[in-house]
Image 1: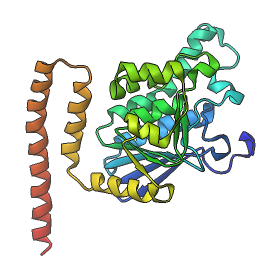
Image 2: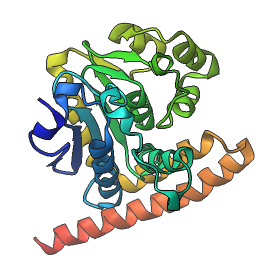
Image 3: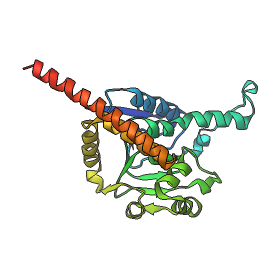
Image 4: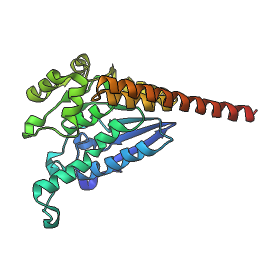
Length: 269
């Protein structure tokens, strides 16, 4: 199936209670990224971030893969003709790619838990998207490959930042420089995948965790994620200040929510 024959939206959105499921939908290309899907993905993720009805987000791919990275047949989403009024080719390429990479920032910074449901191969920019998520649940058919050396690229979608933070600089350098394709068990053992399930159980187990998070203390998770993100770069004393402030904010907000729910329940008889 060619891109012109794409069946349905390039990014699918489902709601199950408070869980928002975002699915990359180019299964014939292992959900490789091109202009259309990257444009749609930024908008869909931004909507999930600001929608107060969403308590947890799940990101996955249609078919047998999560995301194979940039679609080289499409030039990886690189710009076409240069618009002289918008700078040179490199500048325009930077501006365009940086806009697409907001997907990773939004996944990482949105004030709610995000799970990558890795249902098959993930490579290139796909490892940046997976790394931007808080948790990564994988099926046994999942693989992991940085792949940037295949095209002489340095990495994008936050991949070098996320994997250095998640695994440490030594393992991250191993993944990027040696660029070995890892099977699910090896990736799980390295700490790349949070949990590993049989393929047949992946969706059920992922959504079970997602619903638990969506139905849990949302304000608590909001500030919990803020603390964890701050801890990646902030110094220890500042982190303690951040935790102390957010502890008061989160518990006060949670108590108010529970009180309002109880009053509504009592009023309803």
